Figure 1 (cartoon, rainbow, N blue to C red):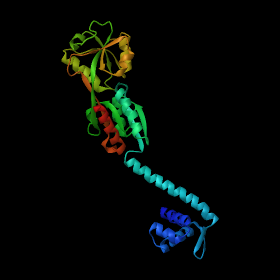
Figure 2 (cartoon, one colour):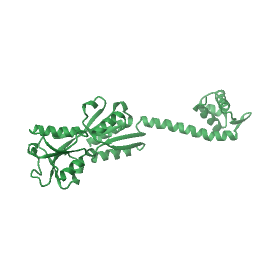
Figure 3 (cartoon, rainbow, N blue to C red):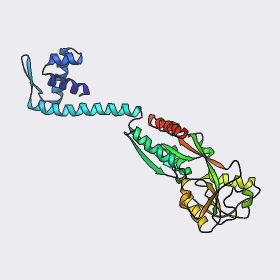
Figure 4 (cartoon, helix red, strand yellow):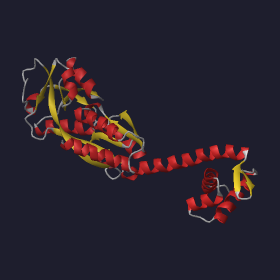
Length: 296
C-alpha cells in the first residue's frame, strides 16, 4: 500500500541524485530506501529511475511523479501545520452569537482586537435573541454567545461568565413629568407598560416584573415586543412607557428620556456562555480577551 513515506523516500532520492545520499539525509539504511522505492515502482507499475551502475536518473514518468510527490508532501506539511495551529487556537472558525442590546464599544473592540490577534481564525457573527442563543449553543450552531442570565434548564449544559451589569432605566417621553429622574418605580404604577418579551429575554422581563412587585404593583401591560428597538418605537408612538437595559442605541431616540431608577437592584447581567463539551483553544483565547477587555 502506498504511504506518505514512499513519497518522501522517492523525493529524497530524486533530489539528492543518489540512494546513499538520500539514506544519510533520512537516517535510514541504503538498502531500506532502495527497497521502499522499488516497492513504490512495483505498486504503481512505473519505472521511476533509470539505474546505471552507481548513477541514477529520473525517467520521464519519474519527473512527472516527482512534481506530484512534492505537491502531496507539501499538502501533508500544510495539514500538519494547520492542525497544530488549530490546537494552539490560531486557525479555525469561531461563531459568535449576540443580540442588539449587547452591542457596545466593548463588543466591537473585542471583535476587532481578536481579528488582529488571530488572523487565521474566521469569525462569524450571528444575531440572535438571548433565548435563541442558549439552544444554539447546546446544538453547536454557535460557539459562544453574548447573552443574558441562563434559564435553569440550560445551566447544567452550558458554562458562563458575567461580563458586566446593565442598568435598567425608565424609558419615558421627554415631556414626561418624571424626567430627568431618578425615577422611583412606585411612581410608574399608573402607567401603561410596553415590555420586552419574556420568550426572547426572560431575564429582562422578570427583572421589570420584580421591580414593579417590590414597588407594590403589577404593571399594566399595553404591549409586548421581542426586540429593544421595537419597544422603544412603541414608547415613541405613545403606546406606554417602558423599563429596559441601558445601551448605546438610546442616542438614536432623541424624543425619549432614559432615566435612572432609584432601586438599587435595577440591573441585569450580560454574560458570555458556551458549551463545555465544545470548548477549544480558540474559544479559550476569545474568553481571555473578553475578560481582559472588560478589566481595561
